[in-house]
Image (cartoon, rainbow, N blue to C red; front, side, top):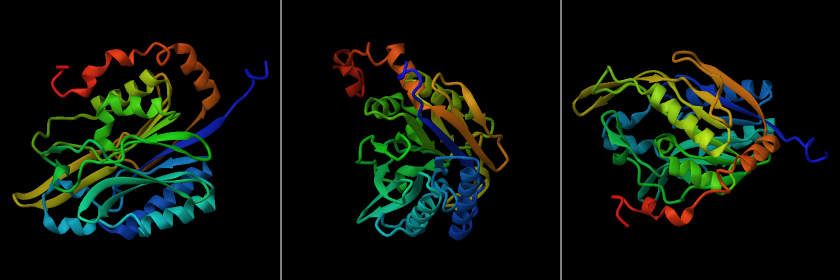
Length: 299
């Protein structure tokens, strides 16, 4: 009976806002919304991908490499460390990382006492019209990681990673109790009739349901125009940030135009019991999954 009554509550938050192309303005907005999330009871607060400025990957421009900074002594990470310590919240912080001659789309995980728990570097790097990330980012070399924070063991991946079920499963296999995905996604410059928002959400709802864990997704809003070698390129980011429960159900969601601070509470002990009893990890057959280590399906 004592085990049945044990609870471990955590409140998660997803932020959503439009970015300018001014670092100080965007970081101030992020801080304001983190404070708002804390006021709503949040313990872990997710800020969207590359929130320091515009999503610059619409263009292949040499000058945009100047937006990168080394991980060590990064000013935005340092500011968020101070904020996390002041409020007692966990904050994953997305940034464009310079590492000698390599560059990564990275995220630092800041614990509730301001400690930097380390970084994850984005593994899957997209390359298509409007999302030309391969020009800027090396493929991440950290592997999929989990971070033991004050409130939960969390898995954090970045944007394009969210389309790959292997990434979600790898993090939960390592003990992740909640999955977090900061994102920058919107319209497709080459096809204004293509709207991926429902597909985007359903895929991540599937990760939550397949792994029986909550999932938090944060996306930006607003129109951003970047000058490219072929003229201006524009993306309208569709927001629709959300928090999903452990069966993939949507428990909190934003619209496609408004600034938002979403919050949801979960009992991680209750979810752990459900995950154990559901059997999806008991009945796995890793010996049959060797085909997943191939590109073409041939073992």
